Amino acid sequence: MIHIAVMGYGTVGSGVVEVFYKNRESIQRKIGNKPMDIKYILDLRDFPDSPYAGKMIKDFNIIADDPDIEIVAEVMGGLEPAFTFTKTCLERGKSVVTSNKELVAARGAELLEIARRNNVNFFFEASVGGGIPIIRPLHSSLAANEIDEIAGILNGTTNFILTKMIKEQMAFDDALALAQKLGYAERNPSADVDGHDACRKICILASLSFGNHIYPEFVHTEGIRNVTLEDVAYAENWGGVIKLIGRAKRSEEGGGIFAMVSPALISHDSQLSSVDDVFNGILVRGDATGDVVFYGKGAGKLPTASAVIADIVDAVKSTSTSKSLHWQDDGKNHVLDYRQQKGAFYLRMEGVEEGVQRARELFGEIRLLHRQGQPENEFAFVTPVLSESAMEEKSAELEKSGCRRIAMLRVLDY
Ligand code: HSE
Image (tube, rainbow, N blue to C red):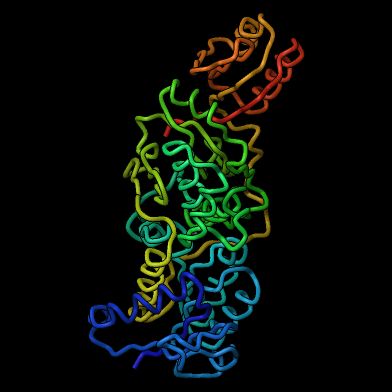
């Protein structure tokens, strides 16, 4: 019998238990008909009415000290005690699978190394993209490629909120409350709304793709709080939508990574533009494959549980540490200054009559945008391609002529 422990009985943990018992027979078939069961569920709360009350424990040491436990699903979230528990399990020869993106983004390289030393596995398919397979395809199916770039809608909650605001005119707070009710949002929804969750996810994908640990604190991150329906209307006039995009790219000159999380204009022609509601879409640009796009439910109890259980199945099947699933932490920052990155920009200004003319003088060939109800003293435009620092300089010059900048968004061409 293969014994599993589940640490955390929140949205994801209860989903793991539910999917495991619902599909137990077929899951066991996928591991060569070996019997498998959940022996413990660790949570500090009481669940007296749960059909699994007999498996509930509050003391982590019961799991750590039980040699029967081969695989542990860490679905508690947060850095501590998740890190200490995970490290202890790996050191005691137990494979760990996790949905905890904060843990992987902050300590992934270290935990992978501990797993390797102890000849067990540390898997984290559920940490990015919910139910979408992306970690395994990146390190195995796309192994022939140098990955040049990754860009994606990586946070279900913000995509859900933006979709509800744009398509149903739902107020921001109501859309967020609904996302929380549906189990999409983080315990502290600021992690979603301010872009930190998407940042952790792009860091995991970038670390795995580019081989060096990419730390979230070095990645410029903006959330969706300042996105307005006026900007949405200008984006529509331009021919696209506004999405929260996490992206990471090898610098063309070599020797560094450009990475950023921000709301951005995406053309209707892009596959990412039609990724709505809680869905995530992740575009991977390989040097042999070209663009490959992954799409599916990026958050929620059962989709995330599906990825956790897939990792459990793989952990049973792997006889030793998965050598290809790793990256190194050399203690250096590999993220380049985002202000050097080039692109086009959307600017919305409140301004003097001659503002448009001045914008043309400063930026060159701008494309003016329009919206219904546009006030007379407002103008919006898309710039030609230039570096972010050059755009900031020119935008400041424009403001000196009496205009005021209301909004700035990047324009991306995925
Ligand atoms: N809060 C996250 C999201 C959960 O909305 O995408 C899945 O990681």
